[in-house]
Length: 132
Image 1: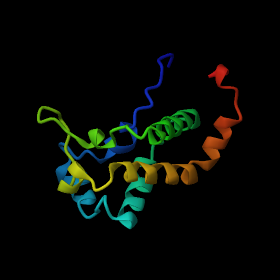
Image 2: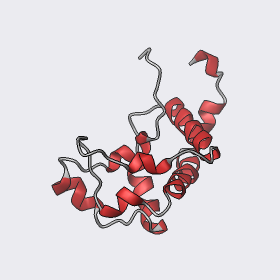
Image 3: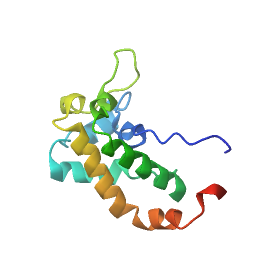
């Protein structure tokens, strides 16, 4: 519990890895196109933001980290979707390996996180972070 929280953006996309779950999660996710805004909305709300294991403070720090990266024009969002051959990870569809706009995907995550996690983010913002 005393370890520093890693607010890496893989928290948002790691849930889409279907490695060793191709017959279950893979089948469920393959009907979605991550480049289609309507499909992406459903994917993000159902999977990327369903992080029940995280507290409201963790969510706040994740959104803050995402906002920082979105403000960095040089941040390589595509690198988050690249999987080395030796990694135990895979995406549900070929489109995931080369999204039309990886930055747009994460902008969409940010917008929906502000909406879905509104109460948690407000609660965390009202606290003194020095006490965390």
